[in-house]
Image (tube, rainbow, N blue to C red; front, side, top):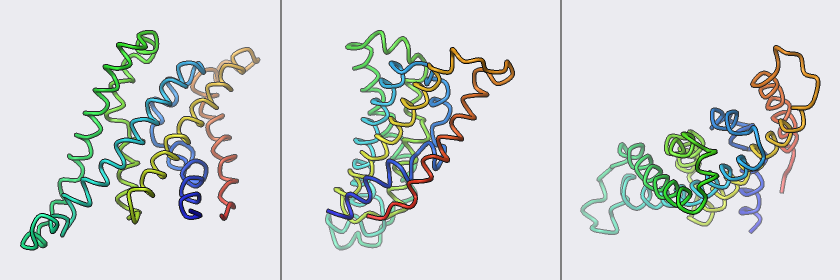
Length: 205
């Protein structure tokens, strides 16, 4: 239980996708102009991460990595399909993103119009792919740890985009020098928030 809590807290704060690895910055900066849109997009990222990372874990461990097919037959113990990891991960992410896009278009057309091109681009969001690659690299012991990691990573991304969108809404009424307005001040705020999140590196559960 302590290990799961450590993975969860670390994936939100210490290993935050935005502030530690700067993954998904394009959508992060483009969409974080209003809190409402940021919450909607952040929830989409959270859902896609929470589903695709565990699913890709199962695919990798039971189909792709060397010896994964031994559950079918001991004769397949030497088979190594790990070279297909990238294309399989992308296929899973793209398929789920397509489903999410259709659901959002049907049940939340206002949010769908506000997100625009960025919703279908979730399929190539580096934060989503990064979650699956981190899962593969860190060699989590079971799907429960992977699910906790995916959920924490999604929540961390949601906190990051909602946090900066709230700040950007407030500073819109501030007297910011003309050269820094827009993306300039957004980059500065992102850097300051990243420094703030670095303080969580001292947490040891």
